[in-house]
Picture (spheres, protein in one colour):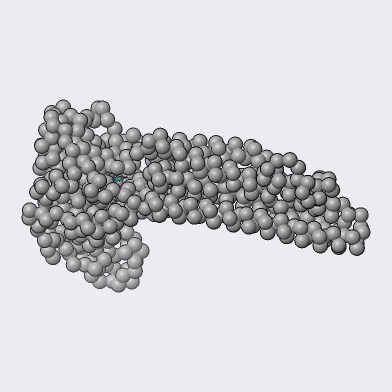
Length: 573
Ligand SMILES: Nc1nc2c(c(=O)[nH]1)N[C@H]1C(S)=C(S)[C@@H](COP(=O)(O)O)O[C@H]1N2
Ligand SMILES: [Mo]
């Protein structure tokens, strides 16, 4: 009895696990097959990416802000991991449910497919074809679900089959589908009769029949595993094939390797040693590309070869234009050193970086198109549908607003906008720095809204004056005596006029500033502190060239940039 119960429980567990696996494989087929079909249309139509992108676009800004804060540039990885976790749990439950009610479970899968179709059609580059990958994926998913669930090895609980079902070849009318259902009943029948006999206490018979049942069960489990492995292999193959066919990004890697950064009419003045305070631990003046912060909504990097790139300039202009790289290369390139900042940067945060940008003055392009006087917004759009609203005045007031194609002497890294992006000194990235830019529309702030403004962020967002302590490190222990406190401050396009440091509640002290490279770059500072033993709080605040000193009022990044003083607690021994 005991043994029989244990083996019943074991077989029940086995079939539940098998059903869950069936659900998982069905879900993976939706994604894998869908991914492969998407490769033939547009990688953005892949169900997994499409759903992810829809999640990104419909996430409340507070959550997205928290995600960027929490995960920084890993926010996408975090999204993928949480999406995968939700999908796996859903799929496992779906499989278990499908065993009870295959039809309802298939219905659920179709419903989910509907969501994926909707998500795919929401993509900015969507055509009606975008519905195809999720549709084909779901069809494959339903087939896999039904095929595997009807082949889940039975457990004694569900068994109520007649002995005649045991006879081979009596699976009844119908094709492969009912055939496999019949085979399933065979297992149930054997298990049920074994159970019945066992409960009669016929020990000899029991041991004999459990062995028979065991062999049967093992065979059916093997068959299920073989089927599952087959389905898994096909699905994985499809996903890999999809990745391979759809890897346009790889073409872009090659395209970028061949891309020649235009030679600027004059090199930007070298950032000499006078712009540095020469203190180890202070933020590098020019940020290497691989350490430059990255913020964007792109789950997959857009793969846009330079030969296919076009820039449309249209809207409220006298002469709409379209440029390709050949046309661009006829023009005069310039080189500028500019510090960029993300609006999501917290006080003391790292979402800022400085690069030597090579590009073409935006003001010249706009002058050629002839901006009509009523236009006050330059609405830039990327190949993946992101938009930014930049005041026309910020582009035409003489500042170094660029259509950038080079970053620190290299073609733009793909993650930073290859082959072309905008850079406008003095404005947060979300209203100025469109990567993979393909479209410039001249319009008005009372007519149009850009991506983040639609989500509640400010339509206009000049960079706020900011300063940061880089050394000593947070909660560092330092020896008493002279300790150098140092860091950076920025107020792009206005310039930093002064930086002050405060220890505990003592009077503010003027820091020494390194030379200003230009008003568009950050400025390093240092202050020699005569440190006395004990715990101390260091604070920093900057004053910009307009005479505005940073406020101590701490506000979060939403809706137009954080405010407040950066502070650090250190222990002096
Ligand atoms: N296409 C596209 N461009 C974009 C974004 C985006 O999401 N998509 N994000 C903007 C934001 S919020 C910032 S701060 C900068 C960041 O540029 P980086 O990743 O090169 O540092 O890019 C801007 N350009
Ligand atoms: Mo940003």
